[in-house]
Length: 199
Image (cartoon, rainbow, N blue to C red; front, side):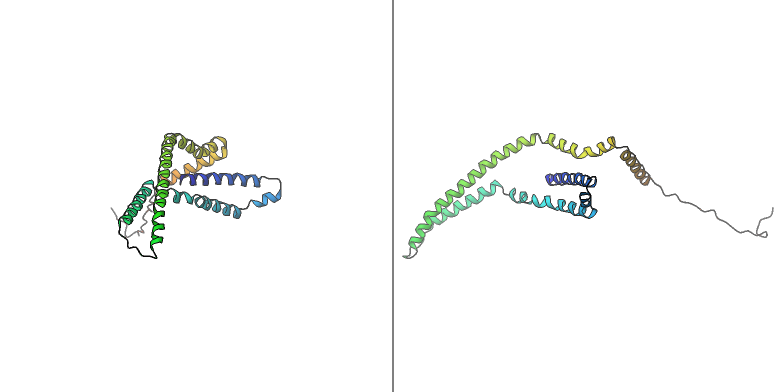
C-alpha cells in the first residue's frame, strides 16, 4: 500500500510537470492538449491504475510456508493409509491399480521436493528481508523528506506563496478562535407625562 501511494503521488507530480510544459509551449497544438477535462480524466486514470497494477502482490504474498508443509504431510499420511489398506484384486482393475500405485510415490517425491525448495528459498528471502528492514528507517526518512519538502521549497522560493500561506493560516486561526458576540439591544419604553413619576 505505501508503494502504491508513493507511485500515485509521483505520477501526479509528473502529470503536473507535463501540464506545465504543455501550457508554456510555443505551439498552440500542445497548449490545446492541456484542458481541465483531460487533466481530471488523467488524474482519475492514474489513481485507478496503480492499485490494479499492484493487485497481484496481495495474491502472491498470502501463501505461507507452513501451509505447504502441513498439506505435504497430509498428502504423505493419506498415501501411507492407501498402501496399508487391503484392496480387492479384480482381473480388470489390477493393472490399473498397479500403475497408479507406481505413480503415487513419484508424485509424492515431486511435491515434497517442491515444498523443500520453496521453504529453503523463502528462508533465504526472510533473512534478506530482515537485513533490508535494518536500513528501513533511513529509507523511510528519505521518502518522508521527498514528500514533505515541496511545501518548504514553495515557502522559501515564492514570495506570493508565502503571503498566501500566511493569509490562509491567519484566516484559519481567526475562524478557529472566533467567538459569537451576543448583541443586546437597548430596551425602549414609551413613557407619557402621566406615567413619569413625580418627586
